[in-house]
Image (cartoon, rainbow, N blue to C red; front, side):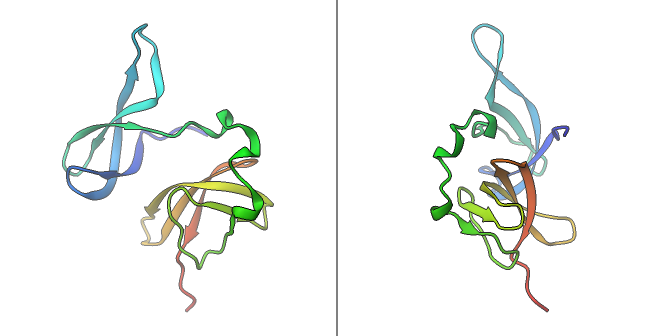
Length: 129
């Protein structure tokens, strides 16, 4: 799966959750880039910011961070916060909510970093009509 050069992130300058473009990675002293620190530019106000991203799921120490008893069962009707751990019953997988965004159709979605499936986007806060 190819990485996008855009990410939905909260801009501390214009105080909105906006689409941000990746400007570049921060380099260490030896000329190598540090993957956890990246420069982003807000497409709304054009302000640049250095953001520190959480380490990818491959570097996590197994299921030490995620415990089934502490996870909330995923349902599309519920609303979730960043950092919350969820359990998807159909996929039998636990994951960490890493970001929230609004899809073009106006539906709210969350990005979840699952242990087995990797990063997936799920809808949230749907109303039964």
